[in-house]
Image (cartoon, rainbow, N blue to C red):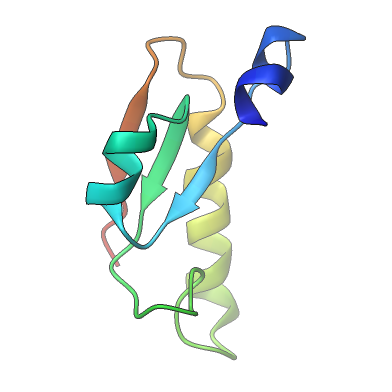
Length: 74
């Protein structure tokens, strides 16, 4: 799905909790987060953390050297 969206000129990025699996799938851009499964934005009710994850994810959308996986440091 991401590849089709990218072909239409729209940058995509995804959050991954399993970077090893993501490397095999090779999405255009991915942000690897160090959180438990089911919590891609981190601990619930911590809006500062969640905002920083989303800003890091959106920042990946400007990357043109793809595929790319970056690690989020909490």
